[in-house]
Length: 464
Image (cartoon, rainbow, N blue to C red; front, side, top):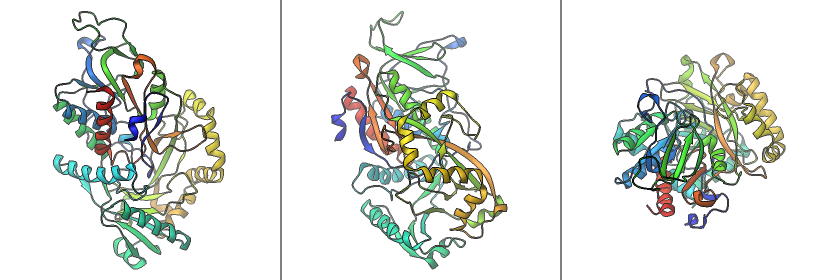
């Protein structure tokens, strides 16, 4: 396996995942805040000790912690989360699509994990009683020059063993989507939708049932090797890694796994990793159909991707609550967790704009970027794209909707990093930390499959 070569000389790809949809924001209704446990009673700083601590209570961190705790019931596991709730950012702010694995290079791990992960996701939801809809997806060619690319996607999907794929005619498109117009389409009937925050909370419940501890409101600011045993300890330096938060509280552990999403690069650097790949935040703005117009869309309707451009393009996405989202665009966010147009962080802005990789990406896709910014400002520009697929949509049928921020990893040459990147630090602490530095979409779909691979890598590196 490729992972065997990863031994502390800066980040290298471990396995691949292509971005296929942009993250978006909507807080699910009726869900409780994520579970949490205090460091100590009375609000005083306390200490906890774990065999393995996972930083980040997003869907991937929780899935990995769950998998590890189920495999090793005799060990003590903890999850550290900076927010007061779980799955609060990318995992709770995404499109909710259960992807099928059409887009990825045949034979690649990203294709294998997406196909495997979607099956595991449906099975898990059935076991837990989590509602989902297998509403399907049409990838629709509206121009003749798109047809060869669509047929190539069909062949790729067949090689990836995506279930139920078929090419359908214009008449068949209208049978499935009465208001959609297209020349031909690729029909993926097993694509679905789910509330991924609800899935993530179920992972958290499994983890805690298995004996795991989740500490919320714990923003990691420092990690280092301990120089002495904890006061009152009779075990010496059994837990040599010290993790401190912004309040001065600390936990100790034998090993760390960081699944920090939008802050994965910063946490990596704290432990002495290479600064690359950098995380550059891109905001995706959605429109929504007015409730009385949601009948226009039954399932997911996607464009044929254009390989000249870095992002997928706008699409129609039904939601579990019955709403329909339209979009997203992709524009540079001025704050890593900036879900509103005017959200701004000087540190995040300066880091992004000072990075040469971003400018190389911008210059290479200048006209595309200008178009995205124009469409972000003017609804009529986005409407023209939507009407290519559903001509009946009018300006009076759409409203500005939620937005989200994607943690887009970039290298110094301005290339989007679609692979997973595992990394470790330097010195004594390096052998005790595993960083998941890049986890692009469809990581939510594939979370259970990815968690197995992360657990395998943790077992190999840390000899659990």
